[in-house]
Length: 172
Image (cartoon, rainbow, N blue to C red):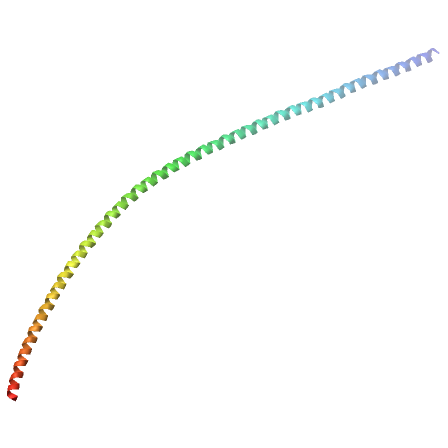
């Protein structure tokens, strides 16, 4: 009986040791599982934190890039306005210079036109004077020729009439 009791006691103790070992293993497994879950949770937490940081950095980079873009655009607009003003001033300067040259050339053209008209009038007067002189000479020559013709006609008539009279006298 003692041996049976002892065997029973040994079996109970072994059973108890198995349960204690099983309980310890379950506790270790539970702790390991909890550590695993905590590790995953902390990893998820770190991922979220890293993701938030990255998103914030992206937003900051995006905001900085957009801010840089806005600055660039405003700079471009200012430069365009400045360039257009400069070009406008240059055009106005060129236009005023061209207007002055136009006025000068127009003044010169008017002066040349007046000189040309005066020269034409002088030439016309000279031509008219020459034509008048020539016409006067031709007229004098014509009048002289007419006078000469009349004198010759008168002489011829006198000569003819004298002859007729003498032939008439001879015929009578």
